[in-house]
Image 1: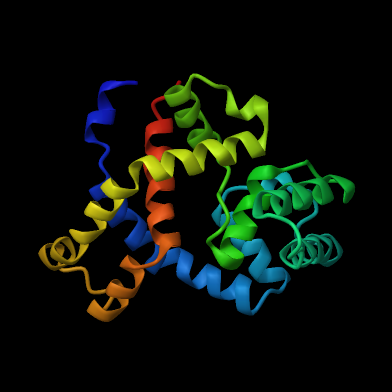
Image 2: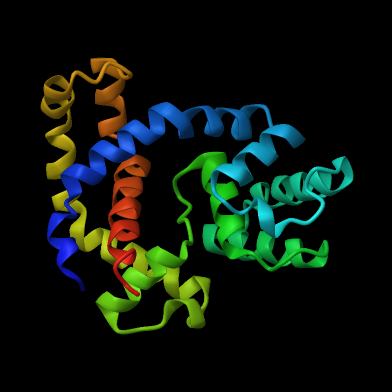
Length: 208
């Protein structure tokens, strides 16, 4: 790992995750979870930089096909979360798109956050470096297990970073989130996991 990793901290990732949630992802989550339509779907795919993998996305028929595939995957209550992600990615391929695990995991995460784990090449690169295992080649299930194991290893460090957020927000005069809202966010497992996700993403940027 390169020298810039000394500057990657859970505290900075906690702050960035908070700001990103309030400025961008909260509205996207609300639109996908409560008001799913073709335009909201397109906006979500563009936000996560995966829209280019869906040829014809601007056409209503194509967007509707993706939307229906997402709704089907969300309703697979008998399946474990990683299997729902894989199912959605397989359906993308059946619809004529790529078998895109990254897009599938991101759409399902936006739908309900926990218990989903976002697949990203940079995150997979960081985990591969940590464990000397090529997770992109091994597939989503192995990536998911490694991600969860890493999270459990670092969860106390993440909790410590979260507890510093109120002071950091006061010092930086961040007014996008109220004290009560921040308190609620700090207690949520999905927010802690999003911090770990950001941490791995930062680490993965050095895996060139």
